Image 1 (cartoon, rainbow, N blue to C red):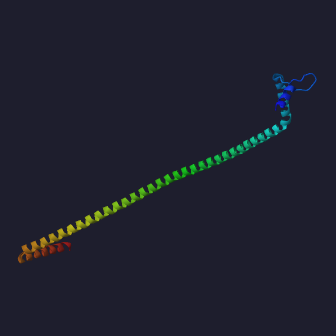
Image 2 (image 1 turned 180 degrees about the vertical axis):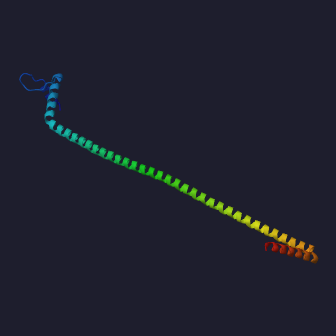
Length: 184
C-alpha cells in the first residue's frame, strides 16, 4: 500500500513542461475538471434528459387533458342535474299550487253541500213544526168542539122540558113558514 501512495506522490512532482501529469493545485484544476465533466454530461446526457423531460411533459399534458375532460364532464353533469332539479322544483310547485287549488275547491264544495243540507234540514224542521202545530191546533179544536157539544147537549137535556121543547119547535116552524111566504 505504501508503494501505491508513493507512486501518486511521485506523479504529483513531475515537471509540467511538455509532459502529461497531474496538477495538484486545486484552485487551478477544479474549474477545468468540472467544465469537462459538465461538458461530457451535457453532450451525452442531453438526449436522455430531453427524452425524460419530454415524457414527463407528455404525462403532465395528458393528465391536464384528462382533468379538463373530467372537469367538462362534471360541469355537464352538474348542469344536467341543475336542469333536472329546476324541472322537479317547477313540477313540485305546480303540484303544490294545483293541490292547494284542489283542496280549496273541495273545501268550497263541501261548505256549499253542507250549507244546502243544513237549509234542507231547517226547511224539514220548520215544515215538521208547522205540521205538528196544525195537528195540535186541530186536536185542541176537536176537543173544545166535543166538550162544547157535550156541554150544549147536557144543557139542552137538563134545561129543556117537553113543553119548552114543543114551543121552540112551533116557533121555528112559524119562522120557516113566514120565510117561505116571503120567498114565494
